[in-house]
Amino acid sequence: MSTLDLLVDGAYLVSALLFVAGIKKLGKLRDAPRGNRFLSAAMLLAVVTTILDLSDLNLALVLGAVAAGCVLGAAVGFGVKLKTGAGVGLVTACAGAASVLVALSLGWSRASGAEPASLAELLTTDGTNGNVAAPALIAALIAGGLAVGSGLLAALKGSSKGAELPARGALWPLGLLAAIALAVFISYSAHDDSTLRLLMLVAAGLGLGLSALLVLPVSGRDVNVAVALGNVFAGLAAGALGYVLLNNALLMVGGILFAGSLTLATLFAEGAGRSLSQLFVGGSSQAAMDTGGAQYANVRSCGVQEAAMVLEDAHSVVIVPGFGYAVAQAQHAARELAQLLEKRGANVRYAVHPMAGRMPGHMNLLLSEADVPYSKLYELEQINGDFKGTDVAIVLGGNDIVNPDAETSRESAVYGMPVLKVNEARTVFVVKRSLRPGHSGARNPLFESENTMLLFGDAKKVLQSVTTELKGSSMGHGH
Image (cartoon, rainbow, N blue to C red; front, side, top):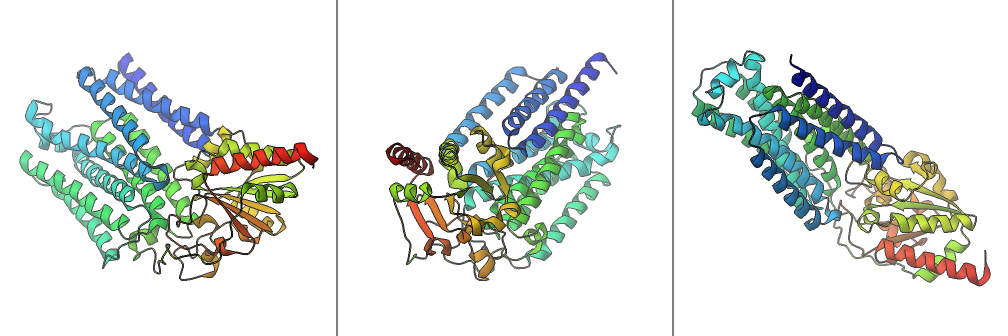
C-alpha cells in the first residue's frame, strides 16, 4: 500500500469519526451547534479526499456539479416552507437520487471506454468482491429508489390523510422477494450489458414502487417517521454503493447514516405512540382520521396585556416549544421572557416533546442558540407529572404534541400518541397564528378548555410584546 493510499484511508477514517461525533453531539443541548459543524467538516473532508483519490476525475465537471448542488440546495432552502417539513423530505430524496445516479452510471459508462470494459465483468469478475457486487448494486438501486420516493412523497404529502392500499401488508414481502430474486438472477446468470442495464432500471423502479407503499397510506402524523425511514434507505444505498466502488468513505458514512436514521425513526415512532412495523404492514395509519377543519365553538383569546398580568403572579412556568416556535425563530424571545420571569422569582422550565422537531437535534439546536441551560430542559416523562402544580404553561406553536384527545378519544388521529399534559396547568397560553390543525390534521379540544387562552400571532412577536409589557409593569409597581 502506497503512502497516498494510507493518507486517503486515514482521511476517510477521520471523516467517519467526525460523523459519529457530530451525530452524538446533536443529542446534547449545549453541544448541538458544534455537532452541526462537525458534520459539515466530515462531509467536506470526505468529498475532498475522494477527489484527490480519484486522480482521473474531470475536476471542472466535479466543481460544476458541486456548484449546481449548492444553487439547488439554496433554492430549496429558501423556497420551501419550513413548517411543512418538505425541506427535509427533499434532502432525503436528493441523497437517494445521488446513489441511484452513481449506480446507473456504472452501467452506462461501460460504453464509454471505462474499465472494466463490460458491466458483466464489473459485477462478476471484479477479483475483490466477486459476484457479491451484483446484489450490492441492486440493493443500492432499490434502497436509493426508496429514499427518492419516500422523500418526494413526504414533501408533497404535508398533513393530508393517508390512502387505503389493499393488501399492503402482503405487498411488502412480495417486493422483498422480488428484490432478492433480481439480485440472484443477475449474480448467477450470464447477461449482456443491455439486459443488465434494463434490470438496473427495474431495480430502481421497484424501490420507487415500495416507497409508495410506505408513504401514501400514512397520515400527516407519521410523515416524520416515513422521512426518517427514507434516510435509513439513503444510508443503505450509500453503504452498498461504497462496497461496489470499494470506497471506504461511502461504506462507513452509509453505515453511520443507516444506523443513526434507524434509531431516529424508532424514536419518532415511539413519540407518536406507534411502532415501525405498523408503518410497513399496517393499513392506513389513521384508522379514524377526523376533520381537522372542524370549527371551534368556545375558544377564548386574549391580548399581551392580559397574558402579562397573569404571568406577573406566576411562580411556576413551563414553556413548550412546538414547530411554530421553530418557524418563527422565537428561541431568543422565549429565553428573554424566561430570564425576566426568573428575575421576578418564577421557576421557568422547558418541556420538549420528541416529535416537536422535524430533524435530529432540531429543538436542541434552537434552544442552545438561545443559551438555555440544560438543567431547564425536561423530557416528556420528566415533566408530565408536574403540570398539575404549574401556574402557567406557554405553548408556542404546538398542536398535536399537547392534544388531550391522544389519551381520551379513540376517534382522534393522534390517539395513543404520548403528549404533554399542559391541559392540567392552572392557566394555558397557546400562541398560534391561527386555529389550523397540526401535522396530523386532528382537532385539538385544548383550545376550547376553560383554562386555555389563545394569543394569535407570530410566536416571536407575541413573546417580545409580552416581555415589553412585563418590563413596563415592573417599572410601574415592581413585583
